[in-house]
Image (cartoon, rainbow, N blue to C red; front, side, top):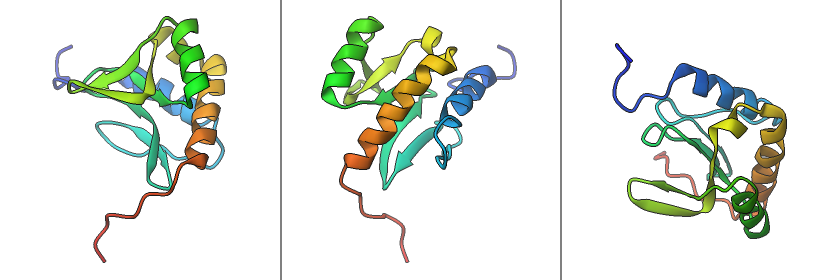
Length: 122
């Protein structure tokens, strides 16, 4: 891919991610190189530039069911396994209607997490 810097996410994947995020009313996509969504300081989805894959944070039961259904794995980036995140297969990323269910579950799970303190200096 000429002109595309190493680790940059293909624009079509970013567009698919934005379409999935748009299924969650009031949620905005954040991040430039690594687009993500968060609520109260807790990230609940991430489109990783390093792995070029989408990760979604799910509660334990939903996470285990997702891993079996999609024959997926826990999300791993920079050699670290993010235990609450599943790797979303590209076929599911392209299926916004089906992915919407998991985006909603992820958002609902984020609502149950304890808010993180802001790190911004005042």
